[in-house]
Length: 500
Image 1 (cartoon, helix red, strand yellow):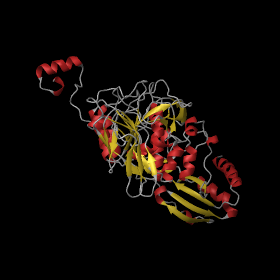
Image 2 (image 1 turned 135 degrees about the vertical axis):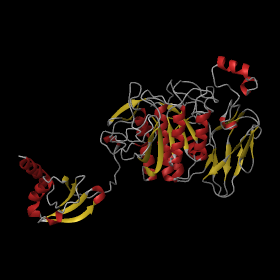
Image 3 (image 1 turned 180 degrees about the vertical axis):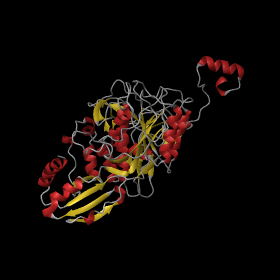
Image 4 (image 1 turned 45 degrees about the vertical axis):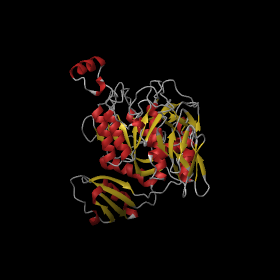
């Protein structure tokens, strides 16, 4: 009966592969490579022992019988027709994927066309979150090994729960879903290396130390970009360990993309970390909706939030080969991380400060209170990189009176001449060092030796309370404990800084 069933299956296979004579045979674990070349009518053409694979050629008039014999052997795992791969020169149509308004809104397809690729496996994006379903049909091709800092093992699988529908998997999809699965979705960088790092649990919460370890691990393992869709409303003093970890990423040239948070508050006035870390390589993201407005729940801030990106009703991957709409700055953040990865695939030398300036200067103007009043535009950003347009870095910033900030010109040639639109508010010297004088705003212009010019967006001169830019994460002046505890401590040790 088994033989009859095999022959029935083979009749279908042979009918569908007329003229096929080559097959791939896989032998089972525990068996040595079968001596198939001893079979009359079969010749062995190639062996790949690591994969336990053998390519064979069958005599045409004995094909069915030989296949039947192979498939019933106890040492054979399977037999399949051989075929050749071919390059797909036409891109996967968005029409074959689930509707993703965000991908359309930011002009992702045009960006892919301009760059003539969809990213690079050389670019590693560490998704630090609840883990990632790295077996997901739309992610597995891009997944690379990661780590689970919650359970302390090498399996960073996204573990769902009542409060976690698959947050990390959803974020990973926005960074780099392949777009190769019909009915699936596509990320901003469909070709990329996704490194899942789990430290948030099934409830979506995680230990501070584990978060720090995850960032340091990403740095050690060569990540180019970190996507961080999480945070806490804690004081800068309390946030020191995470600020220091972000600073280590900054020092290593790793671009840190962080969510602004979902409290509907102004990050210029509230303490939110790691969003407010404020180093050169950090990019903090607010959410936008399909009408380019700010959802009521998205945090914002002209001084501390750098760009906005689609974050409402975002379709992406969730565990178990499923897809779902989720909303939050958590969704906007990996979209930006994916876009940064796409830009770095075109120019791997791009720093976080340069990438941020490109996103801000090329962004679509919207009425959302972030540094650039913009929403990211992937195609316009890619134009800057592929056409080597000159960009002043930073493009948007806030500098406190009497403080200084260095400016440079990306893609410039030779000596660059800088000018301020109002030297009384802020002046800038020939080396690009701006000195802030009094409250107001200026634009900085740059002209290089070839005559190319570029101009910033508004550079605001205003006090930036507790700014990480003015101390880079130093602290010590604020008690990190509840007030009553601080009072008791100060009775015992009144010389402590926060007791003064």
